[in-house]
Length: 290
Image 1 (cartoon, one colour):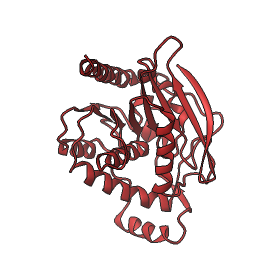
Image 2 (cartoon, rainbow, N blue to C red):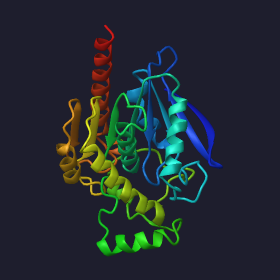
Image 3 (spheres, rainbow, N blue to C red):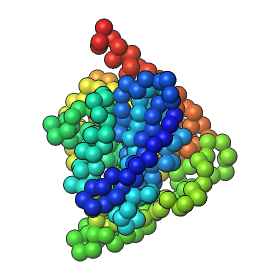
Image 4 (cartoon, helix red, strand yellow):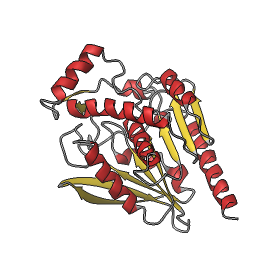
């Protein structure tokens, strides 16, 4: 895997972009646009996306506004209109390659929104889609009165931030050295979310679930989930998935794993699942063109 770094500008906001390329000698035959989670950043996935690059799929990971090395108030994203402009830039960066989409947690939810827009005819249909523990219920764990109050405050002071309430202990097993990602020397991660963006995420979740349950996606779709995830509970994930009726969908739960399956001691199980799924995608592509 080779990593290239650059900056793009969207609405006068400078965003950091990481492009992961296959090793020299490996033909690049497809692209994947990956979206990271709330408070997260792209470089955490240097040791995660190798199942794609090893198979000739380059990955484009752009730090969201207010995240990682991108500029903006920590935890605040202006709007879905801003996200749509980032999507357009990401798609342009794939060139003419067949392109799929993927994401984790909040990024998984934004990936489902991307898929929803494509099935509605607003974007090209992705060649494949993978989501890991998508944030299907952004208000999970918050009382109803808090959500109502936040919606009111969002119209008054949208960029004000609060703690997400998510801790490292909720995301991965800290007592094991196996499968842990290196500590962040630059403190690029954070645990903040703006009131305005939090309210927008709830609307995105409602829109995406409503749209996807009434559409059909005929390309490979993989949904991976930690069985002990309290941030995005497995019970809610499975309930949503079983309501879908798509011909090439796959659900994989990893018992005992927390929110960040890619950072767990047994994360190799996730990578093996991803690898087999990608191999099946390429096999189907070969049959289509023969």
